[in-house]
Length: 191
Image (tube, rainbow, N blue to C red; front, side, top):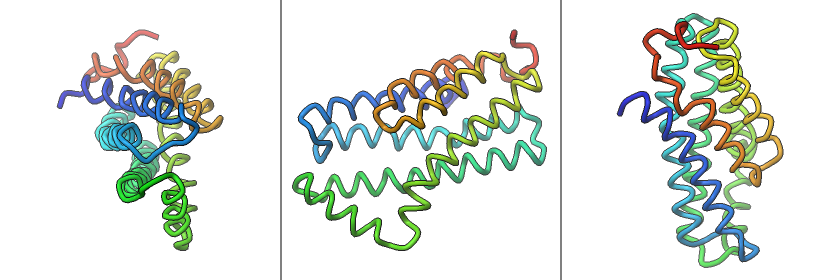
C-alpha cells in the first residue's frame, strides 16, 4: 500500500467510523447491529493504518531519539486502541441488545487495568503521539505549519468526546491526506 493511500485512508476511515456511529445512535442507542460492527471495523482498519503512518512520520522527523519516542507513544496508543475496538466488536457480536452490551462491558472493564489502559490512556497516547510528531515536523519545516495546526485542532476537538469524531476525522484528513506527496524530500513542501 502506498504512502499516499495509507495517509489518506487512515483519517478517512476515522471519519467513516464517526458517520456510522452517528447513524447507529439515531434510535437513541448505539449497538449492537450492522452499523456498530461496520463502524468499529472501519476504525480498527484506521488504527492498523496508523502504524505505517507513525513509522513514516518518524522517518520524516529524522529517526532520532525524540522522534522514536514520540512514534512509540503513538504506536502504543494505536495498539491499545486496537484492543479497545476489538473488545467492542466482540461485545457487539455477542450481545443480543444494548443492555447485554452494558453488562459485558462492566465485566470487561472490571478487570484491573483494562479501563485505565485500554479505554482511558489509549486514545490519549495515540493523539499525543500525532500532536507532538506534527509539531516537531512543523518546527523542523518538514511539513507546512497548516498541517500541524489541523492535527492540533483534531486533538483538541477530540477532547469534546466521541460525538466530536466527525470533526476529528475531517481535521485529520486535512492534516494527513495529501501529506506524502513529497515525502522523499519533506523540507521542500511549502509552508
